[in-house]
Amino acid sequence: MKKTLSSSSSSLRPVWRKRVAQLCCLIACFLMMAAVALQKDHSLWGVWNLNPVAADSQPVLSERGDTLVINTTQLTPDVRGYGGTTPLEMKILEGRIVQVAPLPNAESPGFFDRLAQAGLWQSWDGLTPAEAASLQVDAVSGATYSSRAVLQNVAAAAQYAASSSRISGGSAWAEAWSSPEVWLALVVVILGAVVPLFVRSRKYRIVQLVLNVAVLGCWTGFFLSYGLMVGWMSGGVQWSAALVPVLLLLVAFVYPLFGRHNHYCTWLCPFGSLQALCGMASYRHVALGRRTLQVLTWVRRILWGVLMLLMWSGVAFGWMDYELFSSFMLSSAPMIVVVLGGVVFVLSFFVDRPYCRFVCPTGTLFKVSQNQF
Image (cartoon, rainbow, N blue to C red; front, top):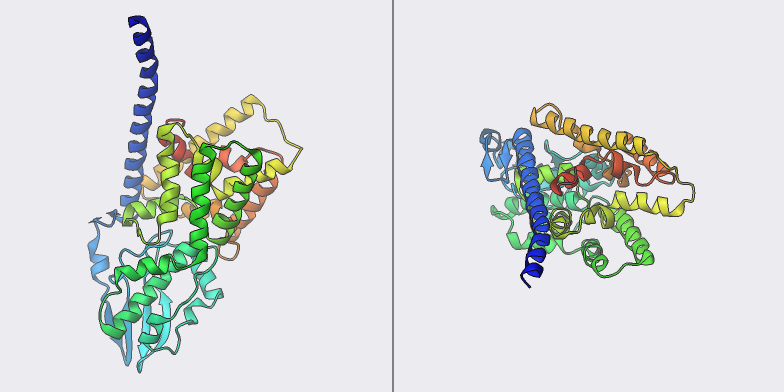
């Protein structure tokens, strides 16, 4: 009996040691990303701001001749898109809105180009602030999270002009969950997070991958990226609009603590799903040799290490706008991202998930947090 108990306890020790090691790696990743956020935005979780002068120098209300100008930088500090805050200016002349324009922000350059092409900025021209505050404008498909942040900024500016008060917190929740695409994205994420725990079916996997590509990738633009995580680390999370990405983040970082390694990459990442579907549709796979696999794996590791060192040094943060996840957003993604996304798409018919296995910095961060670097 004693021998049985001792053998069972000794078999549990490696498991607990493994879990403790994973937890330490997860904490280390948190600290590494915190250092990046401090270096990039000089703030952490929107609580510790090491450079408060810039924010305080932006008055909410000012006048330029006969034009009243409302700046939302201080009105909506907690309203965030994927890359960070999305402040804007609203200009009002003779009681009517004459212009809504974006201010410097952390979003990718192509995002606001996409909003301009969709005619979003002209949606409020000629309206009174009261009319603008009650106007329902649809979010831009494929960039739901960030475009809703812009809409909340407009609503805040309009309500400030109409009643000289801040927009209420409750309306942010109502606005974030008023569209069917957000609810559908939530359903897709829950399916991908729960069903694979109990069901092992190739047919279901194909259905889940297709849903990931169509809903999370092409329609709503919900996925994890370095830009999103650094933005949250520096400015905090806007819970009213971020439930779907937060669930994705929990799957990516918490599931591995319970033995579900790479669950996000395997079951929920839209770009990984696209590559997996391409591989399933092809019968001409290139068999890479062991030496080649080792070299390519080390290329991914070295690339990740170099990028982290560059960010810690404050040298290069712009690469986060060029992760290939945004290639789903054809009208707003940089052309080089679309081209590289197309190259990976074609390559995926011959090599199993080439970007995931040999390049992806975000996926490498997940591996580091799982002690699988």
